[in-house]
Length: 396
Image (cartoon, rainbow, N blue to C red):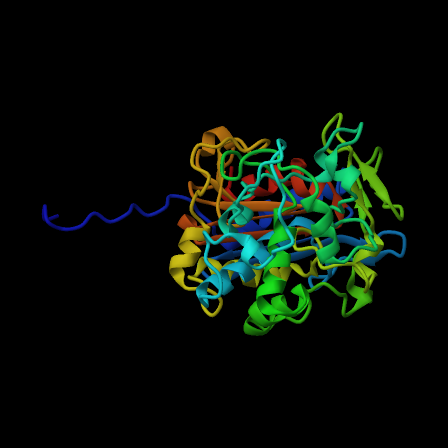
């Protein structure tokens, strides 16, 4: 090799041979279903732009004994966040907003203050990175807190509020910290959704349709359910097996917190406001298409430069609670330290999940995208299944 010849990256030593990978994932699904930690799941794996694994396993509806199907529809919960984030970045690409613009330009009524009453400037970037100073009501104390006092909806329970009304409630709750100074998983994507709607002069649903659904040819992903027969019921992990969710579940995700409110019928309520953080319904296949579109460079949604920024760590050395070894990009986590995160994913991998039972990750270095949508909370989001699936993909 000439001393002037540029260094080439070493080829990955990992093998994603489809038959072996498929066998490993099949084993994980078989064991997880046998242990009755999941009721049903759809798992898709793409490598180098090819779908190398696709399977619907278990039951979509246990009581009716309906098998899971690959085109099943799911309540996406926080899988909504990267979708709405891409819509915001599409507006950035069009020059209609800037990442570091003050959001009050489009939401003049939305002016939350710090705990001492001092005003604060919030930018589009801070909404995308969850550094704007917000939290979620379900993370407040079980004794109550400002979000409950202000009547803020987290977007996962049914509410009579409109999106603007919910943001007005939120504006009365003090920010937890000076925007940009800390990180906290939050309702920020709902605020982002309100901003998108204001910029577009439409509902958030219409904006998502124009900015993402039509360019990608989506038919199933949105804030309404086109084919109710394909919408899987929601289940909740309990011993000895998951139970079907009641009309309203209040589940403390962390000890001492108010608890997340899950109301499955919200997905079928045409009056429910468009929650950018948790309100979408969709299929695993359409979400895989979005992720692969981003991984391949973003066209026709975004230019590659914006995808690169989306997938870069925006939070520097800020600590992400419950996400060791990871930073946050513009809409999802970005892996900094695989050892700290205890994962086989490559540095720079993207990941997030959804409370109703979903996990996904993209490993750009390996040209790998994995989507696992399940109907079982919370095993499908952060249970042993998610660890076993990741290890199976990488052959660990």
